[in-house]
Length: 332
Ligand code: NAD
Image (cartoon, rainbow, N blue to C red; front, side):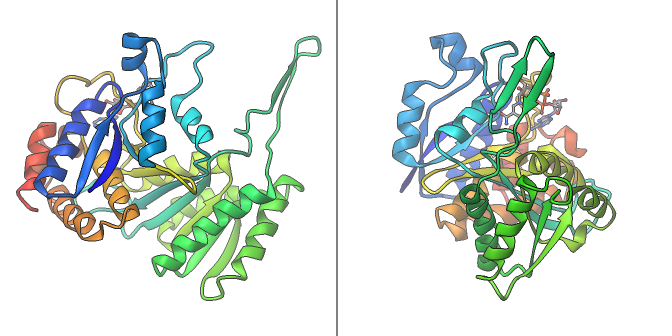
């Protein structure tokens, strides 16, 4: 049995978490959940956004599944997602994007995985504000070590999954220092993987190519800000944030998460789509080497998605969150 920290989150978080738990139980997945929450819910009850008990649980289990978290708006509240990434050096943000039969999309045959550097770049927190001159500077810090880690993670993934190509998205033509360092490191690391083709694309062209011909991409790796934007763009290619998985992975810990928000407009109604969290949970099963369980649940999910009548309203069906889960369970 593997113990996993389960963070239900806020809003629709607990509802989609219950659906995932029910599917895991029905599939006899050898995982036990240690439930520890974060966010608005814990802030309201104990005045803490990230309780010490959650940190202890993460440090012990090293693997977590996380629902969406509401970050209270206002000064002094740093995003919980950002805090967790920095606290545990979860430098790889991994977002697969794949078209699925039955899920509405403008495209066919998209099957790519985006690796976004998660801790530095323009999000390094190096911001300065000069009140007198009314000038604000944000420094995009790129380090050799940080670049090596994310680029190697992308190549290792490509190698493990038999992918033929890694595309490096950058702006080295303009960002002569930071952008050039990232691209230089990519070229060096690519030499260790002669069986994989490396190509590089300037970020603006990359966006156009993704929209015009997304099926040409396999594994994509990029810096933090570009990756933040590309990851939602890629979600848009395959049906939106409600159906894509996400993971934040470091050397010693991994947090798998639904990338959509806590959807306060539909919270408590039992109609939220659990697909994104379930797909993140399937990624988690691959991470902890429970491949048979992962494949079995994925097949049942795909068969259910293929028939929109069995899905939630956002996918064109009439099922509640738990009915959708039961439809998946029936196919296990
Ligand atoms: P949102 O993703 O919560 O909602 C946007 C729209 O998508 C809403 O209409 C919502 O009903 C719908 N939606 C989202 N997930 C759905 C699902 N699983 N099934 C069906 N419909 C779904 O974005 P928002 O409204 O901008 O943000 C709400 C809160 O979520 C904010 O407090 C924000 O800080 C937080 N947030 C958290 C995360 C995270 O924890 N990863 C990500 C984004 C936003």
